[in-house]
Length: 60
Image (cartoon, rainbow, N blue to C red; front, side):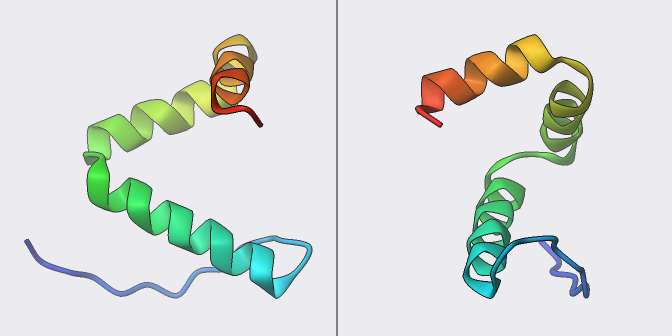
């Protein structure tokens, strides 16, 4: 599989939070397909009930 480099900007309260977000995004990108990531993003943007259920399940 090819690797691609990007420069992105992440909104966060602290640099430590931004690093944590980037690490989490990297894991998600490596474990999910592009189709799965797109569906996840769609649910987070458009389905607050499922998003709330997922957060509850995760304990956050």
